[in-house]
Length: 351
Ligand code: NAD
Ligand code: TYD
Image 1 (cartoon, rainbow, N blue to C red):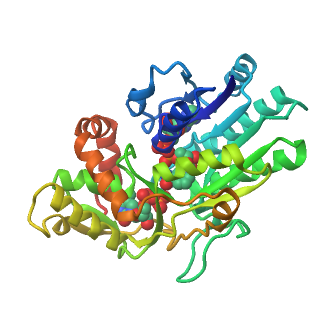
Image 2: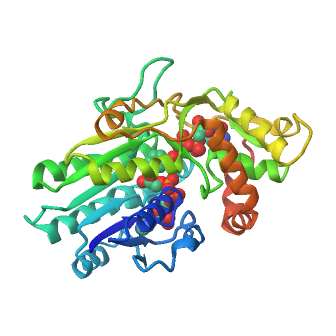
Image 3: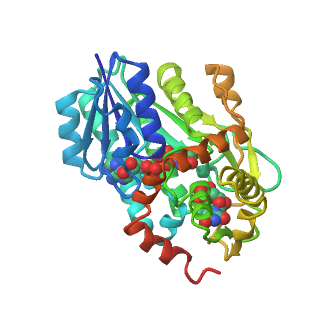
């Protein structure tokens, strides 16, 4: 049986990856390592938690000794590394946490894999999941390819860029078998409501203002989370060692246009008069160093691995809204306690 370690499996994207691997590959033993920060939630995996090929391990990738002992004990043959601090606004407020988890945590995993695998790297793979934000910010034209130079501009993207560089350095220096991917903005069920789409859904449900940074003209390229998980599956099982794959949906939206579509879907689902949710839109002061535009060229993964997104954006948004409305308890649980404090600090005095 192949033993696969997935880090950050209790988070948004990680939980979809864990579910896909546990259900699709009964011949893999899946170990989900997560320290359960505010963003990690085992409720995300309730439906598969009793599967015989699934094990949850609570632990911190910042703890190098713990990580090494874990690799010694289980002798994983594959790693899919998603654990990270992932929110740009939090990285602006507290950059060091991002250095510790995203950079040092990644190097701890690389060291453990290198130590345990030594020269025996046949059938081994270290897969590092990263973001398109490492490429920086685009103007009105242009698109990120795998050859675009790195130009990170937020503490979050700087920490992810640094971790990507370490992963490639271990490939070149120590011949560690690695593969990387850089994906655009994800949306879908189980996303923590500090990120734009679930934050707006939650605020519309509760009739709270929808805080739009600046003029709402920043552009993001959105992909449904299950399509990202499908891409991760394709890369883990068919990707070429040492390569990087960009993942994206060719689906660029100005924030304000996206929020208007979301408002219309919410009015419809909540049976409110058309236009009710839009009235909640509130322009607030901009994010410091706010990247203008991201756009991904996903030609390589399409041509080499045959991956394409499966959902149209509006279809994905409707599915997402339906999930949050059917899981209001999940939303209530994650927005109680420390979320209130975060929200208050982040948005008070911003208007
Ligand atoms: P998330 O914040 O929802 O989840 C992160 C998970 O990592 C949580 O379960 C958390 O508990 C865990 N974690 C954090 N620090 C840890 C530590 N020190 N030790 C062990 N576990 C720890 O993030 P996400 O949005 O699911 O993103 C997952 C990965 O995908 C990240 O590496 C992120 O950079 C990358 N990514 C995200 C997006 C996006 O749009 N969300 C896009 C591209 C790439
Ligand atoms: P976010 O979901 O935080 O993802 P990222 O910053 O990684 O792209 O933000 C998506 C876009 O929405 C980004 O341009 C910032 C903007 N935004 C708002 O306008 N208001 C908000 O309250 C948040 C959280 C984001």
